[in-house]
Image (cartoon, rainbow over all chains, first blue to last red):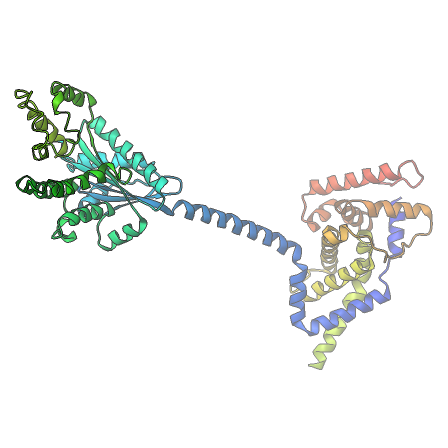
Length: 345
Length: 166
């Protein structure tokens, strides 16, 4: 009965009103071409909407990707490692290394051919130390000082960075059986900018500033390319020099005694800010060294010999009466500083 | 200048008079609302008058017009506004008895993809390959749509004396 369908449709014809309205609309529209464009634009809305949706989702995805990438690539803290090669690594919010920059020629030498991007902090530091050792920047006699300086305004993060860096260093020195002194420090980002302006690593700048505090003649330019261990030696030497005159001026023991305690508190008192640790790869060596000092229990009155074993005589004028019962053991303390020296110098 | 305006006016009147019934029949199958039918008329004829291609024949022109009208009707059916509103301004259905009324109501109640094949196959007399070409479909799709449309109509109208003959 498909004829019935055709019969019904045959009866369907366009109404005159519909025709006249359409003709009127077409005449009006075709005489004003600008309206055509508007009309077509509006009526392509279904396709246009789909395209717009696709475009919008693309923009959103691209935006999110860009945001994620830029967040990942934005450093929130820096870690400066100074041996003499001075290297600074940038760290993002995910504790990953995103940049590494050599502050001096040695630093650039160490970084040559290395890529630390996306490395964990301890891995990056370990590899950096490994490369430095391989390129001869770390002496095997234990005289090398490695300065780790965290550069951030976040104290919690600073502590974390220092610990991770220290862990990285210890991994290498334990493996290679090297003795080094690790100097930990932290600076603010403002100090970092100051150091960058001077083309020097923040860690080294802080060391030089420390040197300048006891030797006003020291200049940044003079020590800019020096090894950290050399600067440390210089600081110690000046301290010794300033400490020597004290015994002569026996009347001013307290006045001279003050500068020394000043240094000690900076290491122990400001423990969080400035630490110096002698790291030996094989702890048993130290263990063997300590028993030797055990037979000299009376030398114990020198609890601070970590830094200055020699000043003991200077500060011993008062305890001199004590060594009286032990005249013979005196020679024994002398070898002790000899063993400590290689670790510290 | 005035001559060109007159030519254009004549062209408009000719086109509308010639194809108005075809467009109206298709829109009758797809649409119920007067305003929608008027929209379809305006857009289809505007597109026809602005068409810059060349029609190979009158049949080609009619086929093109059918395709454009069906697409416009389907676009309107898809619109959110139309799906969610009920029009009170509807054309009367030109039927003489209840049987015709039931038949045309069931055809109009089919999904657009079934309505188009039913109209083109039964009323315009196109065969399946022609419909497939006209609607940019695979022939198998057109066959399937036609078969399903028939089945649906049979299920709804079957058992009566106007069973759809296919």
